[in-house]
Structures are given as C-alpha cells and as structure tokens.
Length: 336
Ligand SMILES: Nc1nc2c(ncn2[C@@H]2O[C@H](COP(=O)(O)OP(=O)(O)OP(=O)(O)O)[C@@H](O)[C@H]2O)c(=O)[nH]1
Ligand SMILES: [Mg+2]
Ligand SMILES: [Zn+2]
Image 1 (spheres, rainbow, N blue to C red):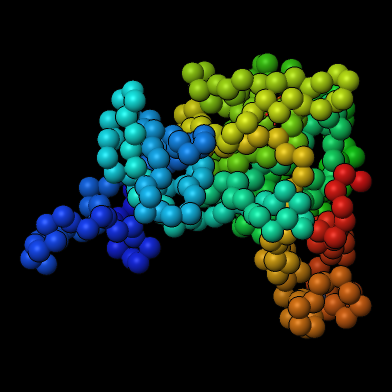
Image 2 (tube, rainbow, N blue to C red):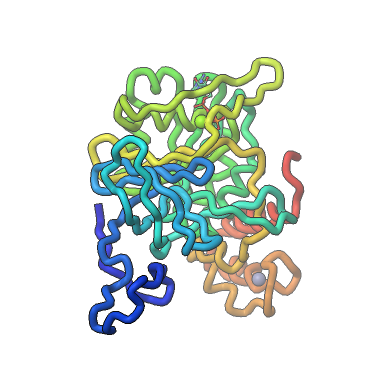
C-alpha cells in the first residue's frame, strides 16, 4: 500500500494545547507525529472501520475534525490505540487530500450532496439485463457523475441468462465505454469473475447501480472467500431488490493490489452538483470544438459551436448526439 509522507499544511488538525503551556518552543513536537495512515473500509453510524497496515482498526472522528466526514476510500491519519484489538477505538485526526470524489444528491433539486466514495478511479455501473429491468436513464446519470468526478466508467451488464444485451449495448456504443456482460452460469463457473477482474486490475473501482442488479454477488465472486457479504433476492411481485446492502464497503481484490467498493442500491442518482464543462473533458474529440461556443454554453442550444465542429468532420456526429443525451439527462425527471 502506498504510504504518504507527513503533512504540515494548515488543514492539519491541531492537538489539544499542552497542559504545561510554559514549555520552551523548541520542545513542541509536530502535531500528531506518531499518527499512522489508514484506509477507511466502511462507515457505520459514526464508527469507521479502517485498515492500518494489516490490522483492522475501529475508529471515531476526533472532535477537532469538526463537520468534515470521512467516507469509504478515504486515507486518514489515526492516533490512539491502533492495535485493532477487541473494544479498542482509535481517533481519526486528519483526512488526506482526495484524488477523486464521487458525489450524488438524492434528487436534482436536493442541495445536500453526499460523497459516496473517495479516491476511486473507476466507476462500475452495474445494470441487470432483466429482473430488475434496465433503466438507461440511471446509467446515463451514473455516466455523467463518473465524468464529472473524473472516474473512468465501466458498464457491467448482469443476468444475461435472462435477457440479451444487444439493445443496451447499441445505446452506449458511441460512448466507447468498456463493458462486460455476465450471466448466472458464468458466475458459477468463475468466468464472470475472471473477465471482470481483468478490468479492475490495480484500480479502485466503485460498484453502483439499482438494488438487486447483482453488485454484491459480483463483488463476492472477486474477493477472497472470507470477505464475502450477504446478497439478496429480487421480489417476484414488485421486481425490486430488497436493498440487502446497507453500507458501502471496500474490499481488496484477491491476488493483486486493486480494490472494489460495494455500495447500497440506489433508486436515483441526483446530479444537482454537476458542471457540464467537466463532463466534456471526457469527450476529447469534441472538447476543442467548444472553443467557439458562447459563454456558459449548454452545448445544446442553437449557437453551440459543436454542430459546426462535427459538420466539418472533426468528430463523429453520433458522439455529439450521445454527449447531448447525457447532458440532457439532468433536465429530465427520473424514472421515465
Ligand atoms: N439470474 C441471475 N441472477 C443473478 C445474477 N447475478 C445476481 N443475481 C441474483 O440477483 C439477486 C440480487 O443480487 P445482489 O448481489 O444482492 O444485488 P445488489 O445489486 O447487491 O443489491 P443491493 O445490495 O440491494 O443494492 C440475487 O438473488 C442474485 O443471486 C445473474 O447473473 N443472473
Ligand atoms: Mg448488494
Ligand atoms: Zn456549446
């Protein structure tokens, strides 16, 4: 695991003032110099399970952290009892700078955005081909969130034993997103895990999607036996999953240095916080064409320069169509 050096910037959490406040200055030791770095594996009502070297340590946020919350995937600095023994509790005194932040809001007009996962570099958007029915709207929204957060998307289409993937794949063909299709049989004979693992190698991948699509089933197939979580079933009457998974959990991949993060099923993926200009970064063939756009162009208006850009042959019109569909997903209500 990568280790970080000691940080001394202003963000550092100050230790309580020394009771012997009259000590000479030169004797003041750096703040929390004996803090150890850990990785947040899961968060449960204020208790954070962290991995410190090879020990699983329970921790709480130190009061000095204020309202800052650590989330799954965060690198944190811990002090106190780091033995990982039963009934011990360490304190988190600092959250390290994040390489990425995946956010969502419950609804588009919900001002409260929650950080789903920190430091992931890939977003596996898991969709069942049936049971529950695929919802392209949710996929589009997850894609926009991935592009906005700078995560590389990966489409995972499960339950191909129940329905064919062709229609869905056609819808995403022009986006050039890597994808993998899995079935019940391939889960059982190990082929699914083998093919998915190739795409996860050495990366930190967050799995998101509707409840019951098979996220936990797949994650379980990828991690060592003793790490497995419980999975659910899809209700035959409502077609909805039972929301088996209630908290995000980071798990190490068997045999290499990648991580998978299983998350609870979502009904929607609110995009209140999205900046279209960051989404366009994910379209390097189109981005230079925006140079002639009017200020604050929505890229879906009559003066948008992208129409001329594709008309001049600089990019495939189908790519522009796909980009516009993704950007427009913010204006449409979900579920239709
Ligand atoms: N037929 C079929 N069923 C599958 C497949 N993958 C998973 N399932 C079933 O789908 C159901 C839901 O699987 P889970 O892994 O719990 O789904 P989840 O996405 O983790 O659901 P939440 O935790 O609620 O978000 C279980 O009964 C699985 O056995 C598949 O490829 N084919
Ligand atoms: Mg689950
Ligand atoms: Zn434009």
